[in-house]
Amino acid sequence: MPDNASIDALPSLRGHRLIETLEAIEPTGFKRAELDTDAIVRAADPAQLDKSGVRRLLDALHRISAAVPSFGLGDVESTTFATLIAASSRAQLDAVFAAPELRTALLAETFRRMERHVRADRVGQLRAVVRWRLTGGTDNGSNGGYDRYECHFADGGCTVRTGATGGTPRTTITVSPIDFLRLTTRQTSPAVLFVTGKLTVKGDLGFAAGLIRYFDLPSPKA
Image 1 (spheres, one colour):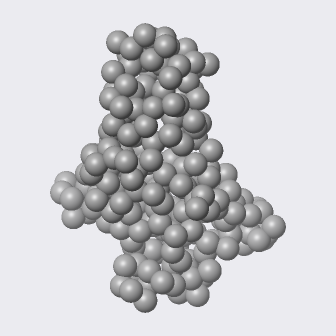
Image 2 (cartoon, one colour):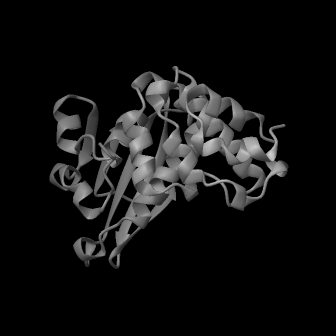
């Protein structure tokens, strides 16, 4: 297990050395105050990592947060989170989503942030449900299914629910998890994904095209 000096040095480490040190930490070996999750993620430049590097980073954070709930992706600033996603290659994100537990955790965290960054002034009196179908899920016992989430807009806010809750949504959006992350970190738009065949819409196409306007989602750092 790393000593306290190694733990304190985590934000100054880079690349695989950072990942290897994180992986070696026993969750009970430190207190929350000893680690700044945001600083660690800022130090993890995906460009310095191989195909498995981002998966290993998120897996280490997920493992530690299981024992120390106050340490995890939820403690990462939204701009830092967006920058990590934007800097990760498609191959790196594919490796993350190939791990079912990390897939679930990353999607849940992304939707949680959408709730946090809703624009109450733009939602106003809107009452609508957006159903998301994220490809590669296991709802039919294989990887050909979907992970389903719903955004319920009402009373100036947005509530996210897991699964299909019944009723008829105003629009249903089908997209890959990677392109969903690109969408929610302002690297693309629903319109671009739609015209390139990477996103399909059932229902109100115009509403789906303007959906991101209801959120104040941080952009990644350049």
